[in-house]
Length: 128
Ligand code: ATP
Ligand code: MG
Image 1 (cartoon, rainbow, N blue to C red):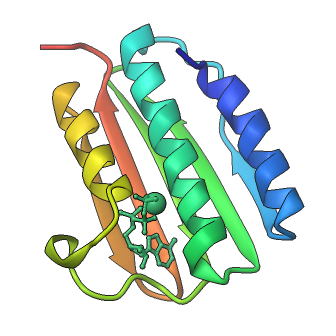
Image 2 (cartoon, rainbow, N blue to C red; image 1 turned 180 degrees about the vertical axis):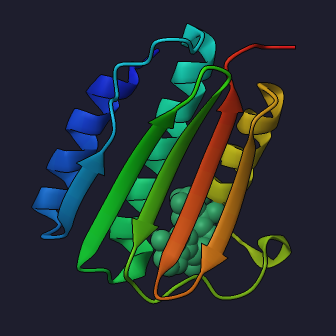
Protein backbone atom coordinates (compact mmCIF):
# COMPACT_ATOMS: atom_id res chain seq x y z
CA UNK A 1 0.00 0.00 0.00
CA UNK A 2 0.93 3.64 -0.39
CA UNK A 3 0.76 6.41 2.17
CA UNK A 4 -0.88 9.60 0.97
CA UNK A 5 2.29 11.52 1.81
CA UNK A 6 4.34 9.37 -0.59
CA UNK A 7 1.73 9.66 -3.33
CA UNK A 8 1.68 13.45 -2.96
CA UNK A 9 5.44 13.48 -3.47
CA UNK A 10 5.08 11.39 -6.65
CA UNK A 11 2.25 13.38 -8.18
CA UNK A 12 4.22 16.59 -7.71
CA UNK A 13 7.03 15.01 -9.73
CA UNK A 14 4.59 13.85 -12.43
CA UNK A 15 2.98 17.29 -12.70
CA UNK A 16 6.34 19.06 -12.80
CA UNK A 17 7.53 16.73 -15.57
CA UNK A 18 4.35 17.57 -17.52
CA UNK A 19 4.96 21.30 -16.96
CA UNK A 20 1.73 21.72 -15.01
CA UNK A 21 1.90 24.03 -11.99
CA UNK A 22 0.94 22.17 -8.85
CA UNK A 23 -0.16 23.32 -5.46
CA UNK A 24 -0.88 21.16 -2.45
CA UNK A 25 -2.96 22.49 0.40
CA UNK A 26 -3.52 20.67 3.68
CA UNK A 27 -1.66 18.02 5.63
CA UNK A 28 -1.03 14.68 3.87
CA UNK A 29 -0.05 13.02 7.18
CA UNK A 30 -3.35 11.37 8.01
CA UNK A 31 -4.36 11.12 11.66
CA UNK A 32 -7.65 9.25 11.82
CA UNK A 33 -7.86 7.36 8.55
CA UNK A 34 -7.41 3.56 8.48
CA UNK A 35 -4.48 2.36 6.33
CA UNK A 36 -6.78 0.49 3.92
CA UNK A 37 -8.75 3.66 3.30
CA UNK A 38 -5.53 5.67 2.88
CA UNK A 39 -4.35 3.17 0.24
CA UNK A 40 -7.60 3.54 -1.70
CA UNK A 41 -7.43 7.34 -1.55
CA UNK A 42 -3.79 7.29 -2.69
CA UNK A 43 -4.70 5.15 -5.71
CA UNK A 44 -7.55 7.53 -6.54
CA UNK A 45 -5.25 10.55 -6.31
CA UNK A 46 -2.75 8.91 -8.64
CA UNK A 47 -5.46 8.15 -11.22
CA UNK A 48 -6.93 11.65 -10.91
CA UNK A 49 -3.56 13.29 -11.58
CA UNK A 50 -2.74 10.85 -14.38
CA UNK A 51 -6.00 11.96 -16.00
CA UNK A 52 -5.08 15.64 -15.57
CA UNK A 53 -1.79 14.96 -17.38
CA UNK A 54 -3.34 12.75 -20.10
CA UNK A 55 -6.57 14.56 -20.88
CA UNK A 56 -7.01 18.04 -19.39
CA UNK A 57 -4.56 20.34 -21.23
CA UNK A 58 -4.46 22.24 -17.93
CA UNK A 59 -1.71 24.64 -16.90
CA UNK A 60 -2.34 24.12 -13.20
CA UNK A 61 -3.58 21.47 -10.82
CA UNK A 62 -4.50 22.03 -7.20
CA UNK A 63 -4.84 19.34 -4.58
CA UNK A 64 -6.63 20.02 -1.31
CA UNK A 65 -6.52 17.65 1.65
CA UNK A 66 -9.09 18.34 4.33
CA UNK A 67 -9.18 16.19 7.44
CA UNK A 68 -12.01 16.24 9.91
CA UNK A 69 -12.47 13.78 12.78
CA UNK A 70 -14.87 11.58 10.84
CA UNK A 71 -14.10 12.26 7.18
CA UNK A 72 -11.27 12.85 4.73
CA UNK A 73 -11.72 14.97 1.61
CA UNK A 74 -9.20 15.04 -1.21
CA UNK A 75 -10.03 17.51 -3.97
CA UNK A 76 -8.20 17.54 -7.31
CA UNK A 77 -8.93 20.60 -9.41
CA UNK A 78 -7.48 21.46 -12.80
CA UNK A 79 -8.05 24.43 -15.11
CA UNK A 80 -8.22 22.42 -18.32
CA UNK A 81 -10.84 21.56 -20.94
CA UNK A 82 -13.25 19.74 -18.62
CA UNK A 83 -14.86 16.32 -19.01
CA UNK A 84 -17.38 15.84 -21.77
CA UNK A 85 -20.27 13.42 -21.46
CA UNK A 86 -21.40 11.52 -18.39
CA UNK A 87 -19.98 8.61 -16.46
CA UNK A 88 -21.91 6.02 -18.53
CA UNK A 89 -20.21 7.10 -21.73
CA UNK A 90 -16.65 6.74 -20.42
CA UNK A 91 -14.56 4.25 -22.32
CA UNK A 92 -11.69 4.17 -19.86
CA UNK A 93 -11.63 2.31 -16.55
CA UNK A 94 -10.00 4.94 -14.36
CA UNK A 95 -12.98 6.91 -13.08
CA UNK A 96 -15.27 3.88 -12.89
CA UNK A 97 -12.58 1.95 -11.01
CA UNK A 98 -12.11 4.88 -8.63
CA UNK A 99 -15.81 4.99 -7.86
CA UNK A 100 -15.93 1.21 -7.28
CA UNK A 101 -12.97 1.23 -4.91
CA UNK A 102 -14.38 4.20 -3.01
CA UNK A 103 -17.75 2.50 -2.61
CA UNK A 104 -15.90 -0.48 -1.11
CA UNK A 105 -14.75 1.77 1.77
CA UNK A 106 -18.08 3.65 1.94
CA UNK A 107 -16.56 6.65 0.20
CA UNK A 108 -17.75 8.65 -2.77
CA UNK A 109 -16.52 10.40 -5.89
CA UNK A 110 -18.13 13.44 -7.39
CA UNK A 111 -17.04 15.14 -10.56
CA UNK A 112 -17.84 18.64 -11.69
CA UNK A 113 -16.84 20.54 -14.78
CA UNK A 114 -16.62 24.32 -14.80
CA UNK A 115 -13.42 26.13 -15.71
CA UNK A 116 -11.77 22.73 -15.79
CA UNK A 117 -12.45 19.57 -13.83
CA UNK A 118 -12.88 19.10 -10.09
CA UNK A 119 -12.92 15.69 -8.42
CA UNK A 120 -14.02 15.37 -4.80
CA UNK A 121 -12.90 12.15 -3.18
CA UNK A 122 -14.55 11.58 0.21
CA UNK A 123 -14.06 8.74 2.66
CA UNK A 124 -15.27 8.21 6.22
CA UNK A 125 -12.58 7.46 8.80
CA UNK A 126 -14.54 4.54 10.18
CA UNK A 127 -15.26 1.49 8.03
CA UNK A 128 -18.85 0.45 8.76
P1 ATP B 1 -7.78 4.70 -18.26
O1 ATP B 1 -7.94 5.49 -16.99
O2 ATP B 1 -8.53 3.41 -18.22
O3 ATP B 1 -6.35 4.57 -18.66
P2 ATP B 1 -9.04 6.99 -19.39
O4 ATP B 1 -8.09 7.87 -18.60
O5 ATP B 1 -9.37 7.43 -20.77
O6 ATP B 1 -8.48 5.52 -19.45
P3 ATP B 1 -10.96 7.54 -17.31
O7 ATP B 1 -9.85 7.78 -16.34
O8 ATP B 1 -12.13 6.75 -16.81
O9 ATP B 1 -10.41 6.80 -18.60
O10 ATP B 1 -11.51 8.92 -17.85
C1 ATP B 1 -12.62 8.91 -18.75
C2 ATP B 1 -12.56 10.06 -19.73
O11 ATP B 1 -12.84 11.27 -19.05
C3 ATP B 1 -11.20 10.26 -20.38
O12 ATP B 1 -11.05 9.47 -21.51
C4 ATP B 1 -11.21 11.74 -20.72
O13 ATP B 1 -11.88 11.96 -21.92
C5 ATP B 1 -12.06 12.33 -19.61
N1 ATP B 1 -11.26 12.93 -18.51
C6 ATP B 1 -10.90 12.35 -17.34
N2 ATP B 1 -10.25 13.20 -16.54
C7 ATP B 1 -10.18 14.37 -17.21
C8 ATP B 1 -9.64 15.67 -16.93
N3 ATP B 1 -9.01 15.95 -15.77
N4 ATP B 1 -9.78 16.65 -17.87
C9 ATP B 1 -10.42 16.40 -19.03
N5 ATP B 1 -10.96 15.20 -19.36
C10 ATP B 1 -10.83 14.19 -18.47
MG1 MG C 1 -7.74 7.53 -16.57
